[in-house]
Length: 377
Image (tube, rainbow, N blue to C red; front, side):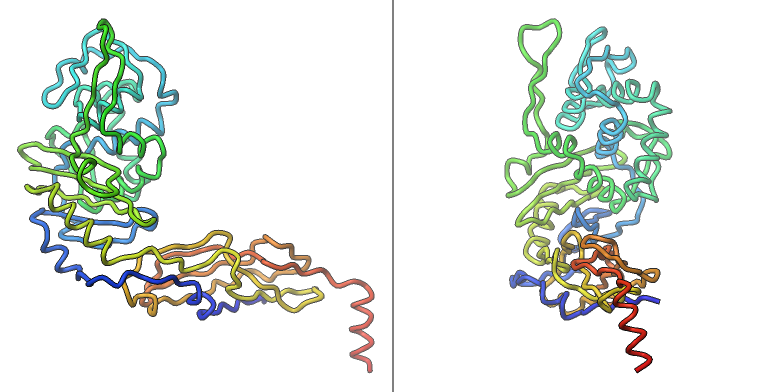
């Protein structure tokens, strides 16, 4: 049976320096918001950096449209295609870009109206264009939410107007947002401050302006969506990127939503750094090889593994090898050789495949004869 021997010291040698600013504890960060529920995640890994009642279910209001947008982008096909606006989308209550009966508009422009100006009419139009009905689209929304890792939510409407059973949590909303931000089309729309779209029947464009004021005031802000209903209160998901780390902060029922999110994201950027825990191409361990001219080959990861860490947490990183099936020569550089789990304070935070970073040739007939001769002598 082949075994993987992983050197923790080899992994720790890959750490870069971490931020030495004053550390803000998670409890102190939670105290910085009046939100009923809050979750702040690092986008690429999903690590929860701060939270307050993050699994408490509440109405999300127009932050629902984050899920609406990514469900449309993933399932609607050609976003440039023009569609006639469904009659039911004309005159929807609340925020609107004032779609008109008989008007044609592209899916992409409707997405800008949805995300920037929070158009409830855009949400209804997109739901019907994508799935044929709001009911069918709600099914698609819930499927997409689960794919994003949101397992404690139920979505009924595409716009977030109050409806029985339409609920999420700060954690689920942050997970959905982190998932959506990994999509280039969504990310581009979410950080746009102003968009102009053709306005059928007029000789001037429809100008759509983003309601997220952090885009203009917070360094590195790149999204994502505001919301309000009487039942939900003020809701907001913000995102920002600094020094290669992107965070997303979801707050539910939060009066000073812009101020609280800005304060929490600042704390996260001061307290955490993205650290390269595993370095591409560096030797992490060795794998035994049968029927080979060498006893072992060195292995490493195919891509670097980065993780947000507080100062001092690098000392709590360890690894746990996952033994592969026995490997037999020949082994070429790049062949998969097993995997390794990365742990923080004995909790698994990720897993990475291991690949050979050197080759192992098969034993030749002459090698086998020499081996036999050696045993006889």
